Length: 201
Image 1 (cartoon, helix red, strand yellow):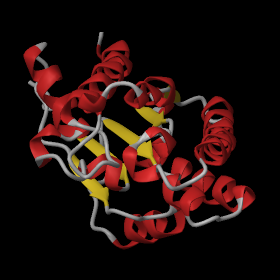
Image 2: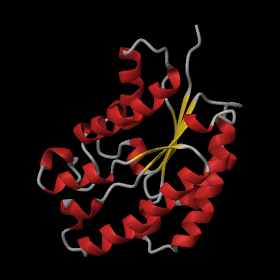
Image 3: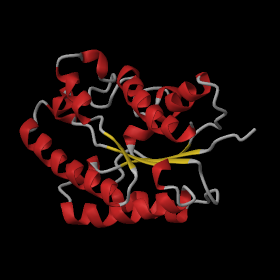
């Protein structure tokens, strides 16, 4: 029996900042897939709070990885937006990350899933910030990651629209007032599982 491997690349949203590691979306994805009787190893995660695309790139290049993975997810860019980084720079660096992700997925493009950047402008943490500016800038970055997903024929999971529901539902935000709660990550995990299972049938 084949035991599937899963590599999750990203930042604080991937490690599940402010929730227990087992409640992060990569771990919830694996748990949901195991419930469907697919054999999955624990996810391998290369992610750190505050990472931008270039920092993720550097980590991937210096990390001892398996030669290939069955699935790879990529969620990166919120810190590029937060730090006021250039959108063109984001496109160039994300493109390199995507190429590497496809290579790590043994060339199976449909086994790579790009996840959109959530809108943190609706969180209590962003109260003193310009929420409209945040939303508009994240929209630009999401336009880029979606376009690259189409160009490279990888799967795309949009969690941004759902993330805005946190504006009127505090249960979707973690105790730090910024990151998603376990409940919000479950919503993401369910969408990602759909993307995985479309390739497992």
